[in-house]
Length: 266
Image (cartoon, rainbow, N blue to C red; front, top):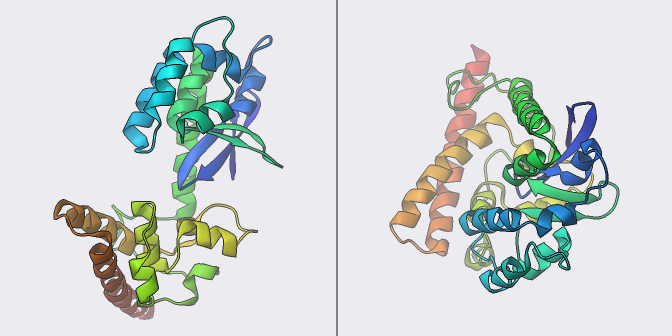
């Protein structure tokens, strides 16, 4: 979990399925006067924007419920909460969280749009601070995969993922299991588990499975993403792709780890 400071307001950022979600609840503190997220959701332009975003990013979006909500948007008598929006339309862009870091969170694309409702100045500073945070995260990692593949100053981070440097061959049960997302196909092929399984095994760790991957694993993952896209274009089934990707992960991690050890000796 990370935090931003925008115009003296501290704003929380959470990772949800490897994506950055920004707290709209925290952002509201910068708004003058009484203003609620439900007020923003009543606006027809807001609903249309959210619908377009879901259409692009969410194949399970409920267009029937979306049409009903759109027909009521803007009416004085109509109110809609973020939780109701998500439950009725199966939307993924807004998330209502309970507990210690409770509140309404939005995917960064939507949070930036919400920032305009606070003020134009707030939106500009929000985007600026978010970009600064991303740059700082890159500096902390100490490398940029695409520009510095030849500078593998390898240092393994102590975490659960890296107990086995070479991925294990998947079991028949794992291969035949239907995974919900392409991201989890890659996770299983390389790490041997889904993002959800990792979170359940590591409840005290913040972030996600890929945040704890080492340099070699992320290099391998980038290669796998490219090849998976190629396999999809060839209309290979999920089972076939998973087998190929797992074999690729085993081979590439072996090569990467061997080359890294040789570099360390020089």
